[in-house]
Length: 136
Length: 168
Image (cartoon, rainbow over all chains, first blue to last red; front, side):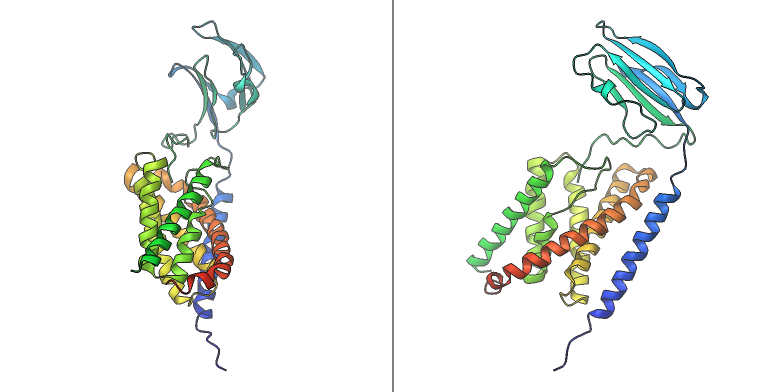
């Protein structure tokens, strides 16, 4: 009985191609993991009210930002990270998010309309990787 | 096209739409647009394997149109079409080369080219080179999820084969 094995050669080629491509992208991802410097930008009602270069911070400091509805957020800055440590809003989502040290997710306090975003300062051309919409 | 086959393709369209809806309801695991399991691809793979490419294209386009109307944002139709049609063409070619064997390899190629098609569309729409930063993520996730959907389609196809053979 003659077995049809013609499919094996393309299968090997495709496997090799996929392995090569995934190794290349893995290496690419690992190589990109260098630490970037961030500037913390604090927005209220979409207006930039404070910008702090996080790598210049040598010791922990706190300050208070007051919203127009009497909403109060206390912000703590540490070397390389920032957090809202207390808020008088009911849900306290912003406090629960804790300290952020990269630009993946901004801290947002909706009642106070306060957004804290970390912007990489090494290259100004690249904006923070937060999409406005996600489609598939 | 027989009535039996038309009904069957409609059933497959509904099935892939349902799978798509279920997947749509799962919150994204990683904050990168475009990374998802792509379970609806299982249906495309089964159709490509047991029916003809024409039928798979028919079901795919119906599903994309319906899902864009039901869940889509303004541009999701273009993204889905770019990814879906490119991956379908590549999967049909690869499946021919592999003589319908090793379905997971076909799935992996399909997942990969689906993501590449969507990224190319994103590049064309946004005209920002910056979206290429997603390329390594999308390559990896496309291959991995494609392997998974390919395996799923392989197992499902084995079970379904006796029912499918007398329709196509």
